[in-house]
Length: 268
Image (cartoon, rainbow, N blue to C red; front, side):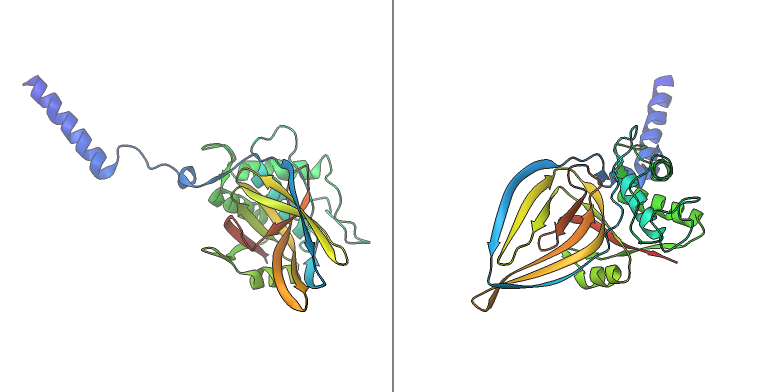
């Protein structure tokens, strides 16, 4: 009789698990893609484009270009968030209390310091729950942590997606950058580029980021190449702060992007 009761209790327990779940569901961030430490694989290819003429449409606002501080692991989300915060410090006072991220006389951004930028990066590292569930951050933790930081400084933050399936809204990206906004790019493993332009020949060097990574776009460039009077190639790039030592400023090609998420950061 006792064995029968035990079996019945076990059956009821199994039924409860099936119907209701015996444990609380895992945090959504556990099931999302993660963005962790990334490195640049050394230059592996250089392409030369020869042309008769070209048309270039570009604007580059040159956001801050920071790298991870000592002691932080899997911190590309915190680095990118700090670049966003420091960029907007020019337009929204006290985004970084007691410090200005730019030189008032020229408007150029200061280099990474040893006190204030590390302070912001550490705070964002915590707010983004970095490494809390598994290594790195999820897209939702990145967005929520950055939003909490901005809200905590007395501003409202909104994240406007510019990604629809396989298509990036390039017009929306251009409009945002023309209006001095930045775009956060949450990318799969991808190539980034260094572009050296000449009169009749451009040289494009390719580097690979082999892990999911978060970067900040503050510029765009579209180049149309012509030969014998005909358009034969159009390249569309976002100019990004990579957060990496090897190449801090690079071109991210949108013609064949590998973005998982991309958000214009709107602040009011």
